Image (cartoon, rainbow, N blue to C red; front, side):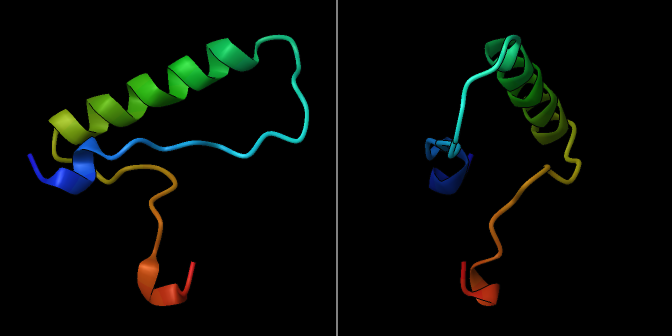
Length: 51
């Protein structure tokens, strides 16, 4: 596993809503499932685009 895969990610949240933690957990689990299966991840930073 590459060091980048182990890097923590932190979202920007302007406000909290009911279910925020659940949605975050679901998102993380889905990206973990995708990573394990060699699929494209959601919301990957494109450093060549400048962000």
